[in-house]
Image (tube, rainbow, N blue to C red; front, side, top):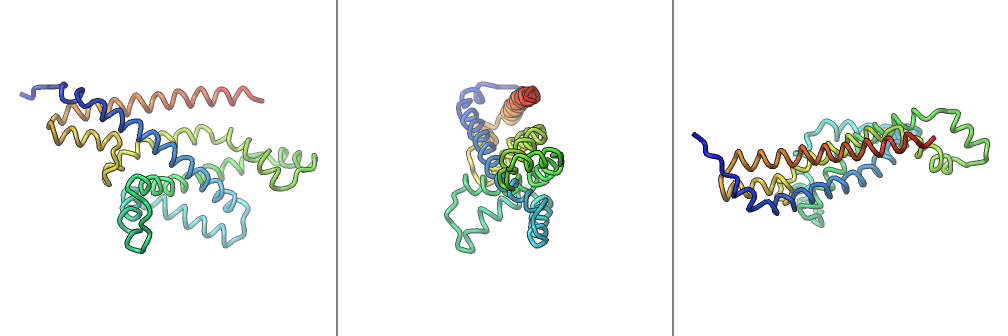
Length: 220
């Protein structure tokens, strides 16, 4: 019968905590870069000329229908073959995750842009705001409030996706679990602890985001 031994896992718990903090940092970076990419692409798809709309549509459909792991391998192993070798394994993963998340955020932001009422836009015109001022002071703030729940869900999804960084030896949480497992062979114990860390962290992130949503909901 299998004998549980938690000692090797907790002796290396600092490795898991470092991996957890790195995973959260990667998710934050990927969300920030992906949001910038998605915001620009969303405005291009919502109100850009036809060539821009087609280009954005191709990006969105391509990125959303390619497995993330394949995209990671392409960025990390493929780009150096064509002369782009400035990214290490960490930044290769951040870049791949940002491209991947940007495609989903494009559609989220586009839906938010289209949900902003024309009355608000007309009010902006009435007080003399030009197009870029209306985007900055009217469309984007209102859109952000609309898409905040979806943005939060995307962040949680990105945090869980950081587990794939272990495929290119980025020392996040899952990679730490693999190292402990290789050295101690406590398969069940290490993955139970790591699964619990993911679960608790995701619930903590979700709770923080719900508080943020309620705070924005009180702003009228």
